[in-house]
Length: 341
Image (tube, rainbow, N blue to C red; front, side, top):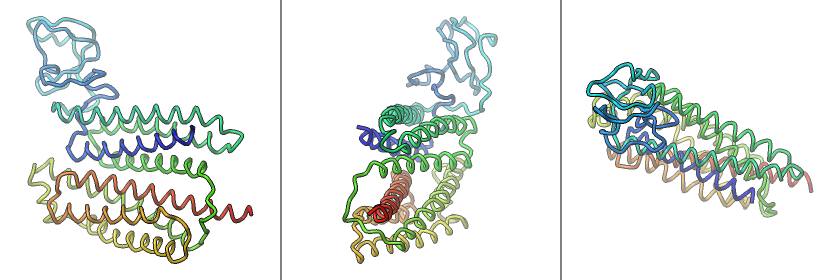
């Protein structure tokens, strides 16, 4: 039962990462100006009329509206009169973004809803972990750390909104998500059944760790490259992507060159597993994921960002990291199994 909930938690975390990619791809990061609610609602508004002031209308405490290009927060429950009464409202001071787009709002809301579901799944996983205390004390301890880190991630998500999508906070948000993925995969490895066919190989294990390190650097660089694209799109509109392609900057070329090293290292991992018959079947999946990742990267640059490629590039990077992590942990476990026999 516990291992099942680890898998459920990991699946939902990946869905959150996918949703985050869609949020960035569609520019929906500020779809909800407040957190954890959305314009003060538990279920967000669907039309501009719901967040626009109107005479003789009922408002609840904490409700947010757009009035004269500013966000206003209701001070209490009241019914408006024929004229706007400033005494009933205070200016929203977390940030100054006040544009409403129903599509963006609901994309961001779904992202937050998946985040809440991941919290529930990891909470159940953590509760179940206490039955594993006698079997392996690391299981409940790491489960608790994972839950605490998810709470930190939720708070970090709020700061991303309040900073109006400050690039460094988006990057930190992504790195913390990968750490949560790594912890869940570690828990999967702790509870994985022993497979006698897997063989330990020192060079294979070291290459996997080096590949993990490269992937983390590559993902961080990728988030920064992505931010440079988003900045130009905000500044120039639909022409922003074309402007970026014409002059992508030094960071992009570093990111692209680094990808060659990532491919070579993971290609060597796959070749070692096959040639030495090490028994790590997940290396086939790793190579397939990396191939798709390279294809999506090429498509973005040479085909002018086809729809969905930005989000798929992000999720494939996260899947690559997770797969590398799992294989590496199984490789370490195979060494320990040898030492115990």
